[in-house]
Amino acid sequence: MKTRLLKDTDEDIRIAAQIIEQGGLVAFPTETVYGLGANAMDADAVRKIYEAKGRPADNPTIVHIAEREELGRVTFLVTEDMKTLMDRFWPGPMTMIVPRGEYIPYVTTGNLETVGVRMPENEVARELIRRSGCVIAAPSANLSGRPSPTTAQHVIDDLDGRIDAVIQSGPCRIGIESTVIDMTGKIPMILRPGYITKKDFEEALGQEILLDPTLNRKPREGEDFHPKAPGMKYRHYAPRAEMIIFKGDRIRVEAAIDQERAEREALGQKVFVIDFDEDRETVAAHEIFAMLRQADREGADVILAAALPQRGVGFSVMNRMLKSAGFNVREV
Ligand code: TXA
Ligand code: MG
Image (cartoon, rainbow, N blue to C red):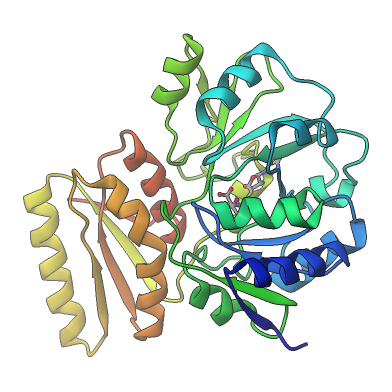
């Protein structure tokens, strides 16, 4: 299949919308990461997403809408808490898990009776949804297991020849995926941390909310480990290189990284260091996936990364780093 490279112009968005309408696959920018979109109500089209990504069939996709009115096509239940969160965080990097509406096929939800729904803020994404007349199912536009794509080039590197088109737009503003919050329980629960934090939700709702207790920790030997978002159980965001996260006092961390680097280089290995400023977790969010991809491109044998403090967006970036490293953490 030849992948069409489109621009984010009116005319090209119209072409992209037509492809979606006709059951094809289009990668498009959002403020978080690039998504790989298909008509969420067309089971055959959504099946093609799984094929193109090599994605396990039990990992549900997120349905993207452009306007609040479209929520009725995705779910039948809109609670007061949901309204509060939509008013506060949409359009934006929040995905709500809600009961599945009858027009959303099971392929889209990975056989679940719930569905993830998000209204992105990126104008190209919203215009694509509007023009297609569809609600759009879209996981991140990477090969399954690879770091999420934050530029059009990342998408092309992974999916050229496997999808119908890519809308080439700028780099994504945020750089890590949306916060996934489950609204189907008594108390809302974060299933995947993101740019919108636990504290942000608590301020909006005026109550404490929950974090999936499996987040940011390694499964214990023989443990029945069931993250509530099916996607969170897979080794994710994995660079080809070995990756070690150094955790502890910053000065000791940097000394340990220097020492490890010298030892590895003496063995003839290519070393790639990730050392974000501790106070600039939004910069870290913006850069992390691009850096993991860069390490691979440069043929790194090992990635040495400094841990971030696990608060706010730092918790979310650490979530991605821990998964990339397969929880390979060295306390120093
Ligand atoms: O920012 C984002 O959310 C991006 C852009 C493209 O919008 N999309 C994205 O999709 O990250 P994906 O498919 O890579 O991740 C979706 C996550 C997975 O961990 C999946 O298991 C979870 O959301 N999810 C989706 N529907 C769910 C459901 N009904 N119940 C529990 N988890 C769900
Ligand atoms: Mg993904």
